[in-house]
Structures are given as structure tokens and as C-alpha cells.
Length: 90
Image 1 (tube, helix red, strand yellow):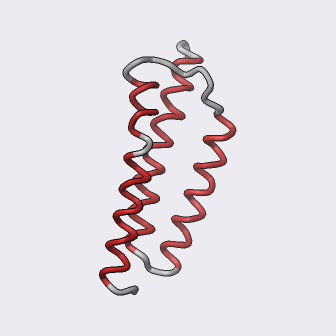
Image 2 (cartoon, rainbow, N blue to C red; image 1 turned 120 degrees about the vertical axis):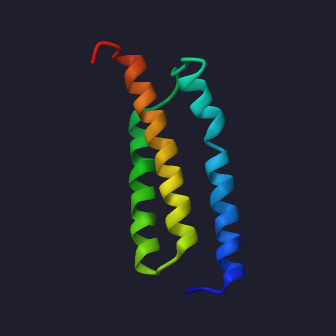
């Protein structure tokens, strides 16, 4: 495992990445706005995050694992919210 200070930098970077999704989550879940959100793009981002998560497990990096799990939760929340808004009867 990497030195603790390296993992802390990774956790900080991951936290910033997750915080960056909060305004988008608010737009979808609180303000009920979904215009301009591309589900295929978010699906691709989610796929990239899964790949990074697998990489994190392979290199045994807690910061990569935690950051990508949190980011996946954010992306999944946005995708779910957008799909609910676009298909309210499903």
C-alpha cells in the first residue's frame, strides 16, 4: 500500500470529485431539472468509475476504492433521478 500521505492526497482528490456532483444532484432531485443531462454520457462515466474501482482493488488503494464508490453513488443517484423525471410512470 502507498504511504499514508499519498492515500490522504487521494482521499482529498476523491472528496473534491464527489463534492463536484452535489450541485447536479440538487438540480435533479430538489429542483426537478433534467434538461441537458445525457444518460449515455453519465453511463460512460459510471463505466469509467467501475473500471477505476476495479483498478483500486487490484492495487489495494483505499483512496481509489472509496472515491470511486462515492462517485458511483452520486452518478447512480443522478441517473436514477433523471430516469424517474423522464419516465414518471415507470
